[in-house]
Picture 1 (cartoon, rainbow, N blue to C red):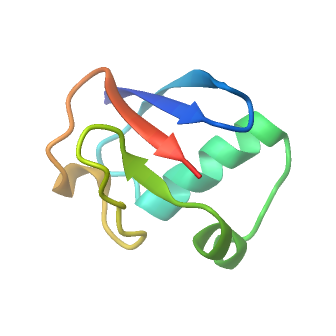
Picture 2: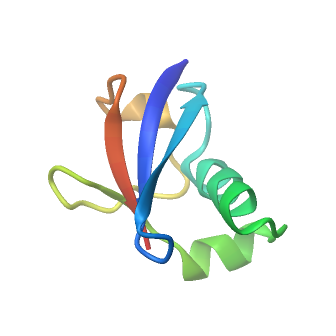
Length: 81
């Protein structure tokens, strides 16, 4: 398990999540969108409309890769756009 912070510009705040390192990036984005906006979306909509970006080095995380493939530690920050 890893603790993450996700900044959402629409809401102008950080949201905290505790997730497994084995979670797929697309599933993580889906979880975040569902919890913030209280809507259920399919994976194709999430892939096309939302990006999860590393807050430190500004790189996009690929949807088909698990979180454990990135060097992420507790308190790591992301940007959801």
